[in-house]
Structures are given as C-alpha cells and as structure tokens.
Length: 343
Length: 292
Image (cartoon, rainbow over all chains, first blue to last red; front, side, top):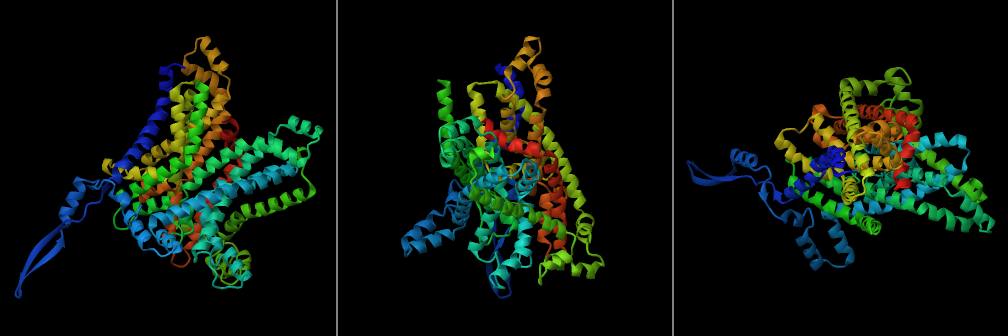
C-alpha cells in the first residue's frame, strides 16, 4: 500500500486516538505538575471600642480571580507525587525508622491511601486472573462434553455475567448479599450469626470483590477455551492414540500445547481489564475496606468541595506506569518477533 | 470429539457438576432480580425470610396484587428514567456507527500495509487499549472546562469513539487480514482506485466482521460508567450514571426499588442482544485469540 493511500485511510482513526488518548496523557502529565491555589488570605485590622485586633480572612474575590486566571494552579513539580496521598516518601521513611517489627511497618504503610489502593488492585488482578481462567477452563471442559443440542442455551446463560454492565452486575449481587437479601440472609442462617455482614470486615469485602471479579470474567476465558477445544487437531490426537499415548499424555502433549497461545491471550486481556477495577467498588460500596487506583482518581475528580485535578493526575500517571510495567513482557516479546520477521 | 480428548467417568461427573453449579451461579442473580423488581421493598429485602420475595405477602398487602409495577413507575415516570434511556440510545448509536466508520478505514489500511509504522501504530493501540479509562478522563476534564464543551452528549460520544478505536482497529485489522489480498488487488488491476476496491470488493464480504466489531463497540458505549459519569452534566446523564445517582437518594423508604427496577430495565436489552447475536459475540471474543 502506498504511503498516501495508507494516510488517507488511517487519518480519522489516528486523529481520534491522537486527540483523545495521546494528548490527554500529555495533559495528565502537565496537570500532575501543578497543585490547586491556596486561598488568598488578607489581614484586616478591626478597631473597636476595646482597641484594635488583627484578623486574618479569606479573600474570596481574589481567590476566585486567581483560580480563573491560572486554572491549572501553581507549579509544584513532583511535589504531588511525593506527598502523603501518593508515594508518601517522608511517611515511609518515618515508618521504616520508627516501626517496631515487620507487621507494624506493613500495617502502617497499608494505611497510607495510595498503598492501600495499590495493594488491593494488585491482589485483585493477580487473584482474579488465574481464578477466572481456571473456572472458565473447567466450564469449557463441561460444555464440551454435553450434547450439541444443549450447548446454545448453556453458552447464552454463561455469557450473561460478562456482558452485563459491570456497575449493574455488582449492584445486583450487592443487593443479594445485603443482610436482607437472599445470599446474605442464608449465610447468616448457615453460620448461625445474625450479625454476619459481608460488608463489615476488610477480609470479607475483599473476598466478595474477588468472587465478583471471577464471576464477571470467567465467561470470557470460557468462550476462548471452548473455541480452542473445538479446533483441536483431531488427526494429531488420533495418531497419538494409535501410537499408544494414554489420556494424560494426549492432554499433556497435544491439548495443552494447542491451548497455550489462547491461555496467554486470555491472561493478557484479563490482566489489562482487572487492573482497572473500579465499578465493583462503587457497586458494592466497599470504599471503606477496599479501594483501587481507578477509584482514587474518581474520588479526587468527584470531590465534594473542589476537584483535585493535580492529585488525580498524579495517581493517573502512576497507574499508567503500572500498566506499562504489566504490559512490558508482551511489548518486549512482540518487538523481538517483529525484529526477527524484519530480518 | 469427547472420546478423543478422553473424558474418564470421574472427570465427566466432575465437569458435569461444575457446569450445573456454574449455570446456577451465572443465571440465578439475574432471574432473582428480575422477579424481585416486581415486588415491594419489604418483600425483596425481607427481614423475615427470602421466601417472602417469591410469594410476596407484603406486595399483596400494599398493592393488592402479587406483582406490582410500582418500582418501574417510580423510576421511569417520577424520576424520569426515560430521559436517560433516550440519552443512552443516542450515545450508543452514534458511538457504534462512528467507531465502525473510522475503524473499518483504519483497520483496512493496517491489514494491507507491512511497513514499520504499521507495527508502531498497532503497538501504540495495544498500549492505549490497556490504559484505564478513568486515567484518560482525568486528562479531559480541565481542558473541557476551559473550552466550555464539558457536559454535552457530542463530547462524550467523540471521547468514547476515541477510547474505542484501539480495540476496534485491532479487531477489524485481524478480520481484514483473513480476507485474501488478491481480492482487492485484482479489483485494482481492473482499474479501481484503492478506495473503490475497498468499497466494492472488500466491504461486501466484510459484513460479518463489521457486525461483530459493532456489537463490541455498542457494549463499550452501553456499559461505560467512568466516561459518562464524569463528562456528562446532570440532565444529559445516560442510564448507568443515572442509576448510580439513584443510589445516593435511596435512603428514604421505598425508593431502593426504583434503582432495582431501573437496573433491570437497563440489563434486559443486553439479554436480548446476547440472545440474537450470541454467535457473533462468541466469534468476536475468540477473534483476537485465534488469529493473532
């Protein structure tokens, strides 16, 4: 394809991505370098019958003018990245110095908002990804063994948790695990504990969110593995049987190599999607016990008093760095493949 | 098939049990909530027994019938949910059609060129695909306030189209790759321009791929929460952020059923979509895996 044709075809798509993905990334970076203006203070002298006193007041008008003139705020360089609500460098140094024992240090670091969100995001990503893959593979094996006639309806029902809007799916489950809902009430009855609530303790809310994540993502793994099982190389399987391979050997040397590329693909997509976990935290209103990086950004942007653009932008940049680190093995491998092909 | 993988009897029983458990886990929450949305709060969130949600004694007491439309009436009429439904319709239709227009052109170009920059565009798209949407939104807000375009439907539409592009061009690129190059090249030998070859020779055989990709664009626009919640003003809200704003005000007795009814109203169209397009959705989910 000629350069000119290529450009003529690609430009709408490229322009959209440039303007609304690449440029915002730059904009996020610039915003993260600034921080909101402090309120302008003025000192007024109040003179009454009992002498004069100095009073410090907020000059609302001057603050408004300043904010309008420089909407970005004042320049702060990397200050926002290092403050208490992000990387908290000083606090960590202090904790490491004064902490007594490993558990104490970990607990205190965990209580810093950024590290709290980071730890949940990572635990969620690295638990839900394998769990969803295992569940999906088990279901695919099951569907593969039922008569063809039933497969359509089974696939239909299986797809529902994946297709449903994440926020609405988590709300539906949230209402069921409510202590008045069917699952919540049944659990209370099972454990004979009328106070049992899945929302109260951090451990139980983490478990709830991870269960939700597995429920939501397993259908995707299922569909891909199921399609993989449909395209198994029958000739190879049959010749392996003739050569005397037993069931385990056939699975080990024919089925698994056939499914490995699919598993890599599923794993990659699940990692990307789980790392941005956000809606379930709103749906299960679990922000007291579990927050994620995406939720931190949302929380800064929907602040009650004013929106903390600088803080949200710094968290965004840190999240993007996390995404790049997650993706780096894939990027390096693709790059090597490309180099090899080019040679 | 079954025989050649070799299911032993214990394995067959084991996978059968897993399958049954999975089907209940996957489908029951939806059946339960759809049924419960026709009850009053005292039944759906019964303090006594969940059996009340099935038989509905409080619903009979309060409304005279076993099933009530009170939740739907409250959400759709009193809280003007129909307004958000209309906004969602506009957003999803526009996002899907513009995404497909841009995506087919771009995906075609990427599938027919093997130069260095093709590789880099695809890699950039992969990285963009992985970016959590909310990180991009935090970059939009301040510029949009300054330009005075915050809060309007077209803004949200174009942002969703852009966020959708990486995924769309990857998927269409792999569909176009499966169409032999000879087809458009022979059309060009016959005197077509590149664009005519694309429109007359390639597009007629591309419809399955386009429909599949369109479904996923639709789902992205329909299911989005982070972009629509932060970029749309109160009166332009689509369904998902609207339901979220219901949640803030359901403390008062009775209105939680509005949120349940609205959730069911927003979820049922998805069921119907899956029912009709199951084959395309399955082929779309596997397209990336099998081809590339």
